[in-house]
Image (cartoon, rainbow, N blue to C red; front, side, top):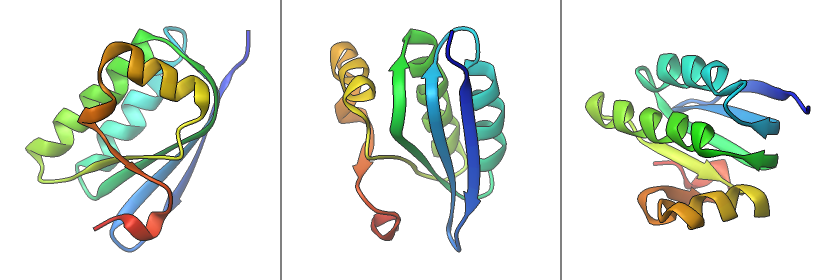
Length: 108
């Protein structure tokens, strides 16, 4: 089983979490805890370019982060989703719910 690695970076008006590996029911809480903490303070970017797989638990963590962000007046952005992440988002119909970006310079 492949692990999830999360690397955190900070920008002036955003926090960035780079995700590597698999986001699934075994590790989604790690992402959820970090994302919920960060999105209360700044906009949050999730770089999904290095995800190799994502299941419904991972999608749930992302959706929950987006919903919480709205409550705090913050935005969640998904940057460069890998083909696997894109498939997971599209298969559930959630792709249109997210702000998809290709560079941190697109964050407002």
